[in-house]
Amino acid sequence: AQSVTQLDSQVPVFEEAPVELRCNYSSSVSVYLFWYVQYPNQGLQLLLKYLSGSTLVESINGFEAEFNKSQTSFHLRKPSVHISDTAEYFCAVIRSGGSYIPTFGRGTSLIVHP
Amino acid sequence: DAGVTQSPTHLIKTRGQQVTLRCSPKSGHDTVSWYQQALGQGPQFIFQYYEEEERQRGNFPDRFSGHQFPNYSSELNVNALLLGDSALYLCASSLWHGLDTQYFGPGTRLTVL
Image (cartoon, rainbow over all chains, first blue to last red; front, side):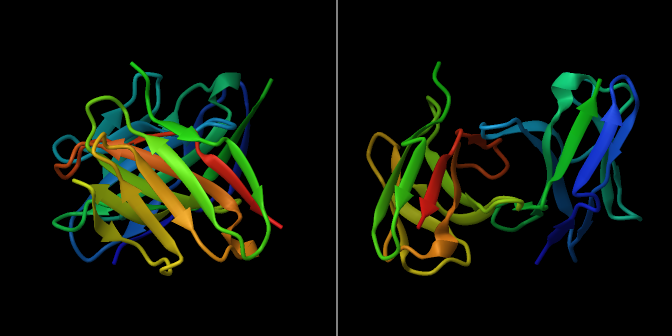
């Protein structure tokens, strides 16, 4: 079975500062990796995903994540955050050749201060 | 085009009661998955429906059951409610072919007193 660890439950940062949200996974087989964002009182929205190919994937709003197989990580980064990025961020993994049901981490609350 | 919708938004029940939550998938989607998100936790997979049948199930007791209708909408039923069933229940829709992106609804907040 696969599992996901999000090392930080809360990450406070000032506006326009860079941020990194950490995600590590464990799996005995190849995986597909995802980051979702959840704004207050809303459902989850897919931010970006890694299925294959380039290990660096980007979202339309400036976030990027890099798949590092040797370190079993998929950290999410943004060079300059905005107040509107304040939200809960979830990392998820799907095991290759399995049921295609994602396993989610516990989430990281990104709090952007002015 | 409406996305995934869920009803009701909030619900308060007492222990032992039964509850039904409803979900309408995004237009064109044929697969519905249900998740339980406890406070401070990530979503936990309950089950998935396709072609009106339960296709996959997570580690949840039989008190949790569901249904999918011919129009692809779905219901989640929980019997004999426990305090620990208090959570946000999320519905996600997708197409039935592997890694299609799941689109989530806003959820139903269930409080069991």
